[in-house]
Length: 421
Image: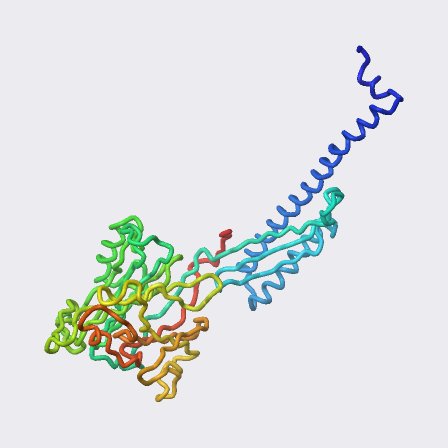
């Protein structure tokens, strides 16, 4: 009973020795697994540091081209990882860039880490794949657009049509007054002969817009992104058909997308007194009159540069709830000269009773996007006794038309990038 543990271990009958050996196996395995785990974590953390540095360097370092820049960053990063591990702890190392836009880059790094103890168990391979990634974005990038061009295109409608630009927030909740889904809305074109002048400064510098901007910006916690109306005004000719408008360009923040609203007032293109109240004459009582609004609610999804539309629904109560309207035609032009009707040597479709085109290409810097609207949406059914008059249309998609130059991106101040995830 009083024999020591040492004496117990020294017994020569073999029973205790076997028990000790059996008990030692899991302890040795745990120690081996700990070695492999520490190795895997070391490689993962080191790769993360290297991929962070590579992603930032690929954006910040200036060079002749992005391809040249990335080639240099990749070779330096792989050489550094090779010096660190000498091919022992990290094998088959690779770096993969994914340039998601001109101002956002994702870099993924992977390596196989040899195992010394974990692979003793059945089903565990001899090495483990470790993968990490880093995404960087310019912290001071600014999307730059120019005002729409209507000088090349003559409107064909008898109704008064006014186009508005706004920023659409697809992820905001419906009907939340504190977080409106449409913000910074301003008029940018009409078919009544008005002139429109954009102020691209933020805050605006045009004297007539300064007070309007300050009122909107200070009226809610989100500033301009918390109010549907943006800074704009009629600066001249309010009671004539030769109006002049001033507006602050809707510089949409991250998370929102530049969108359009078509405001249609029946039978009023040449009757300015009805443009703002929608009380146009009813032409003998046999045609529906009034104001109708259509919103594109444009948005983009990751990896897809084609415009998509959450809106374009018919006005209530004249159509079924949620019923879509096909009123916009979009054409991507390589040059401004292409954005002319076919009869004038361009590529813009013409003719009545057509199915509108929809651009599927990417609106890259240097190109132009054409928008043509049909102000009376075709192909709808409604409950109004006057619906046939409301929905009458020639389907030519040229009632009001504009051309927007595709955006460019510039940085303000020093070129600077930041990790976002």
